[in-house]
Length: 502
Image 1: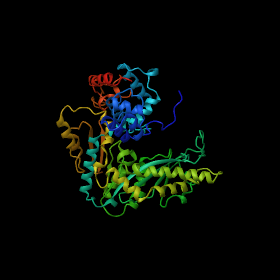
Image 2 (image 1 turned 90 degrees about the horizontal axis):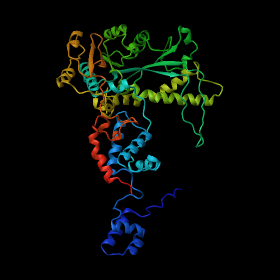
Image 3 (image 1 turned 180 degrees about the horizontal axis):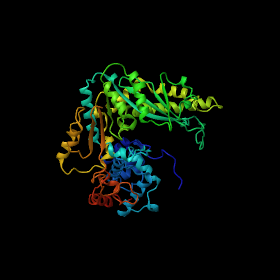
Image 4 (image 1 turned 30 degrees about the horizontal axis):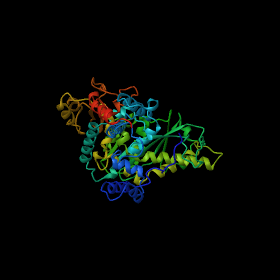
């Protein structure tokens, strides 16, 4: 059946309809005069005056599900998506079809159609389709509130002990990223409806590792660039003079960071650019190149305190990852696309890459980007509340109940000061979510998730919130997990009594 054109329904306002119905019921106007005065169709006015259609009812057919059931369905779908168990459009339609089948609601072709989906989005504008970002299971499990609270407690203790509350220029963060000669093309202007669109890239996928270091005042140290090669001859083909001023160039067999390069960076870049004031704090992840014994000994001699971020939490706690590397990647892709468009006979290679890298580095390493990163991560000023509670929702799926509440209290009160000894640290009972390990003399605080305990990973009971083959009530499962099916029975009963189609 062909669709009618838009805007042919309800050419009157809700206020006009209400006034017309009131005038007829009070005897002030007849149906014909009220219809003419308020521009409301006579048949519509008759339906509302007689009570056949309730006031405030939406035009068109009634939806398959009652409003309360539909609201519960949408709420559970959104809750499951917040926890990392989102369901697709096809899964939602399939679950709704099974729900209607259980309630004996007839459906054309046994499944709701696109009209139902469009109506659902119109009735619930908060429900949209979005492509989720990739997040590994290890990151999902590790980013939980006990881990983050323990880290910020240690960070606050270190910052207070070193008297760095009002010295942001002494708080540093370092991390690596990699860039290939083959970039990701940026958006271009083209004809609407174009299905196939190409953009030229480099012929080589050779990678260069970049180590960046920033502080809480917005200052960035010169980068360390690691090229692929076995000898220093591999650096001779790079046009290093076009790189950012002070860039340290080195090489590695696969262009990866290693312990030797980590020690080289700390000696030749960090110590030469951090300034003479002591003590200072350097926050990094737990990569092996950051925990080299020679590096730690130099840090101890120079009164540089190194603190490790909790493993698998850098996507939330690393300032460089949060606000710097994103703009850097976008600027790099844009500059490469512009370079290749302006120079058809050239490609991104060792001769042209340093200049493109320099432009992207300058565009990303701004004071605003860097200071914003320290703020949103809660590293400076130290503020654990900067991490939103929604960040912990995916990990709540894997939480296990504590057998003894005192274990959590004892574990969270473990002494993690920089002066504690290994014996003192290991003698404390481990908390159920996280252990704290302190390396004496190196001032490294690291946290490791307990993944080998019998209770981890937890066995999730109840209904699978995302499986297409799960029971009918799974979209309405409380918080997306382990709600008994009996809790859904009242909803099904309400559905069968109040959701019948007209």
